[in-house]
Length: 406
Image (cartoon, rainbow, N blue to C red; front, top):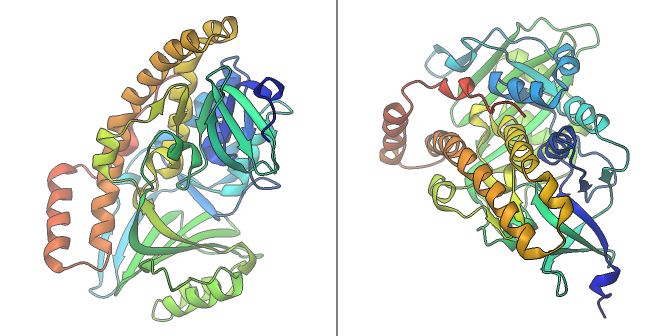
């Protein structure tokens, strides 16, 4: 039998997921005087994924969280970016690197820095959420964990990524998948590398390779290629097999790319199918229900083509922290669901209203890029390219966004 709801462990705010967005949200709330509990299913910080490119809008958000001063010392300032078409010998500058601050950071450095800024006891590991229920006594959210325990909370924020149980509990559809896969990795050069402080993205055939220096001895890279999800075909998860696939996909690329693959840290390799929440779902979706909402990939997972997924999640954290801070006193004073839900609903309305058009723009732009990279008919690809040219004539405008003060 279920334990009595009256005996549940309870908290005012629970954040599901201890990834980048979940930790950033907890830190934003902490900066505004709000305590939260972060539940992470893994037994330690999830630092896989290699590197993360943070563009000017992301640094503005990190400034508000109070951690940017340390992080700036951990990654090169990127001067510019280049798109190289190896088949036709073309070269085009990336507009997103024309001005402002852009750096690539090790994901582990970013995650660890934010986690260390949180109060002791905020982050709890080994907590896998099985379901989200409604407490029969209080009407507030009630979380069931895989170990059989229950946790009650006034506010629940889902930040567990694209496979979010919290998102499912408020009626959001599972995200869709591009017919694309991405391998990400880090290559260490003990004696230093000669790569310029630039993002270089090379396309040959149907494969795209990106290279971004982190510091003078470390390069983050990615390989994107057609990989439709097939229920009866499983992509290998073992690092050695992922490495073999990366080597195979880049065998026709320049020698420097092949060397980068040969020398990479095999144990740090990851593979993912690229997922997205469709732009029309962003525009029309209901992103909160009662005292439950979502942020980060749980809300707006998108293709990585603009390098904005991580920064958008940090922006979410700042806006959500600012919105909930306005009802801090109401949250602590009342224990009645109707009173709390009314105030929380107003805060969530403000949060979703502010974020909807921002992430809809990012989602649309990345969706159109993803369609043009997929194995689609030439007519569909042409349509996506025309739509992108019309809707996003200023291709780098997304970096100018400012999420405002916390």
